[in-house]
Image (cartoon, rainbow, N blue to C red; front, top):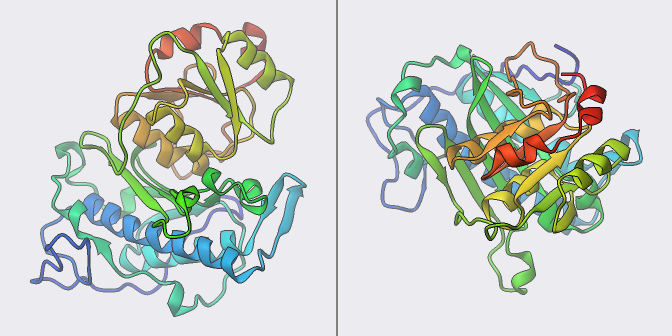
Amino acid sequence: MDAAAVRCLLCCVPLVCGNPGDLSGSGRGPSMACGHTVLMRLVASAYAVAQKAGMIVRRVIAEGDLGIVEKTCATDLQTKADRLVQMSICSSLARKFPKLTIIGEEDLPPEEVDQELIEDGQWEEILKQPCPSQYSAIKEEDLVVWVDPLDGTKEYTEGLLDNVTVLIGIAYEGKAIAGVINQPYYNYQAGPDAVLGRTIWGVLGLGAFGFQLKEVPAGKHIITTTRSHSNQLVMDCVTAMNPDDVLRVGGAGNKIIQLIEGKASAYVFASPGCKKWDTCAPEVILHAVGGKLTDIHGNALQYNKEVKHMNSAGVLATLRNYDYYASRVPQSVKNALVP
């Protein structure tokens, strides 16, 4: 595992049994009931952690200092929000689930994490949901969590705030099975009094929640693709889809949300640019509502802890009609992208 892999093994916070917490509908409670499966407890905690992450993202902008650092080039940026959110997510989850493998995007030096970044709560509404039977016996050490603390960083620095998401994906035996997406600035264009942010979550075999599923009108081919990482392969592949429209936006999480909310019919990225932390959580949400996400060749993506982080054969995702789009990927594009 390279330096970007974060194995967070901090102190374990024992679970408080006997009190199911707040089941009144307010959502968050200070303690967990006994009897819940590891997976559902993890998803409930990840939901609360993602909401805190959204607050951190908004706070950094409000304070006016983004702390921008170039990583590999001018389009590959890291901000103060990326750093703080990754510390918050990894440390918060590791305290409750010390046997997890947690892999985060940012290569951060080990350091003491400020207590104000820690989120100990969980979303009790998730704990009311049944765990799919195939996942009921999963142990902590069997799970890998992929974290993108701020998906769409470049857009974040440019004020394109609706492109920004926080992604927490959960994988078992190499397959993405649960995910949480927070949109810190959802509803931000609705006026100064608007309530900002929402959190979408899903588990395979259970469903996806926190949004209204909608499809593109029948017969329309609207492609969503990269805004800032385009190249000839990407353009060739998009053109081959014979699109009615092309949406160039930032963030893999944002693109999958476009698919499930009827703004786009296919996400096409014929390039090795995105990583496992970009796709793990969004893939779950899409698959949970009947969609499909693969590489350009049609191969399922793998998320075990030893896998290479780069999605080297690109991404093809649709809510419906996957075969139509897959059939139009040029052979020249497939030849150029090696899985």
